[in-house]
Length: 229
Image 1 (cartoon, rainbow, N blue to C red):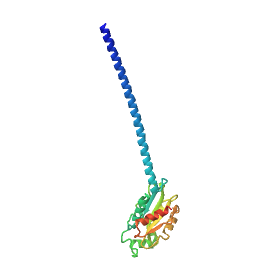
Image 2 (image 1 turned 90 degrees about the vertical axis):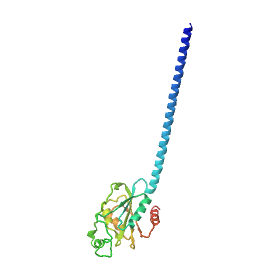
Image 3 (image 1 turned 180 degrees about the horizontal axis):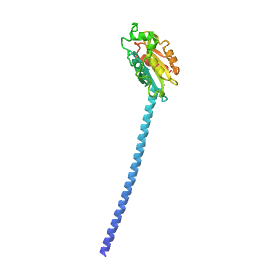
Image 4 (image 1 turned 30 degrees about the vertical axis):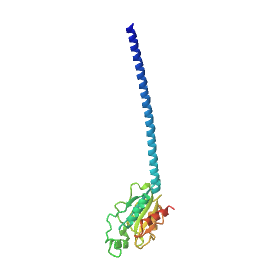
């Protein structure tokens, strides 16, 4: 009789232990499910924050570069460095991409002596057939994505330095806004922009701007701001 009682007590203890173990196991499962749910919510929150920050960054870029409709390109030919300086200010201010027009045969200081009838530029000016200057590159791969162009050059004998002609002739400016700018010691913009527009035959060409070597970066930025008014 005592043995039966002992066995009964033992069985009861085992049953209670099993029930307690199952309850603990279910609690662990529920706790794990809750942790998973909380982790998923946290991940979604992090993703939403990342997307929001990305959107804000894109918005700032759009303000600088002219929006998402197209890119800004700053094209320039600079034989002495003056035009390059202005081009870099424009690119930094607008978020535009720089594209330098480099002649296959660069102009030396001797070539640029316009007071010397035997210099390269003087010979090219006197003989228009010599003005077909070959460039290292006259097109860009994503030209179709360009919306706004700043085109910079020197003024030679009151016209745009002819290496620029090679670039203009090589591209279709349809659907693009072009803002010419030039640097010169004494000559103004003159008809240089208008002549380039006629050479291009397409595009929305603006009046343009002439900068002297003494003009500051702030003068360049002021011109850019005036274009947005």
